[in-house]
Image 1 (cartoon, rainbow, N blue to C red):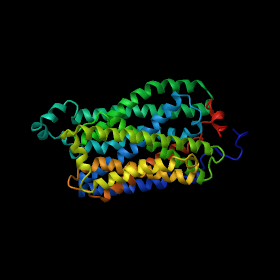
Image 2: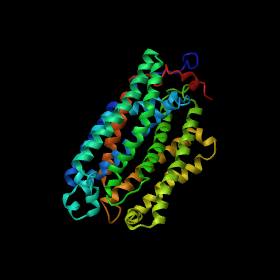
Image 3: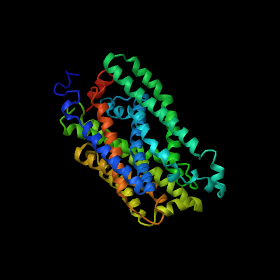
Image 4: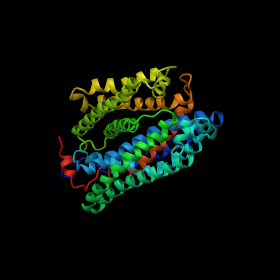
Length: 394
């Protein structure tokens, strides 16, 4: 390590502690949101679900990324891996933030009302799956699996830093194989539960892949912003090379195309089939002002990133690639808002201040948890067997 990078400290500076201010902002914003609950409890739950889905998708994208790197024995990403590891380590804590959604089941989900089941044969047919008890049980199972995998990915990596036991790398790889398989199933079902079942008559067999594509594209945007943030603070400037930023830019560009392919395929199949119970979902979201949100995220997370990132040099330009990363994250939130809010406001777009407070509250807590974990150990996996290859990458 020191031979290659004598100028870099690998410990997160103690004087750059962002945990306390972030926790403070998060608590104040969540309290404000809770006050909003008493003013309009339905709006509170829909705003909360939007932000919860946004930050959960980033955490889940990070978990998939870490397991994929172990499974493929990737070396390019080793110096970057502590960032997503520090996100995944907190999934078991993040699980507690689904509890408000349990209390809001009747406000969020039409299928949870007994009188709706009595007069709707479609909902009655789905009742064995779409019922409040089974919904809660499923969420506990999802987060138990994700929490364990996230803890394992982070804990064993940090243990390898301390012990130098390369056998832990084999353990992580063997965990990642079945872990990815179980993860993909639980992620798909979670997306059905959180978002698709908001409109219980509507369904899309592509929705799980659609949610994954959104999540994974956004994860690369987060990683790019994290690298640029560290550089801006004077950290890891000689360890994280521009070639690493370029690789992240390439991945973000690739998953921008993958996202567009999946999103358009879902839309095209429903448009072409023209079945009323399927098209009504898009009809609600292309009217009443929601169509402008659709145009925004179409350009924000596909058209503009595709055009800007097409030349090779833009992918390694910190200013350009971080700007596009920020645009993708904004578009990701807008798209989730576009999916969730028409269920509450059928007759047109209506913005609530609780959307801002829930986002600030959950976002600040999410970041505070990340910095709490990230600052506790060295910022790169120093004893990973592939670290030297990763450091020499140019």
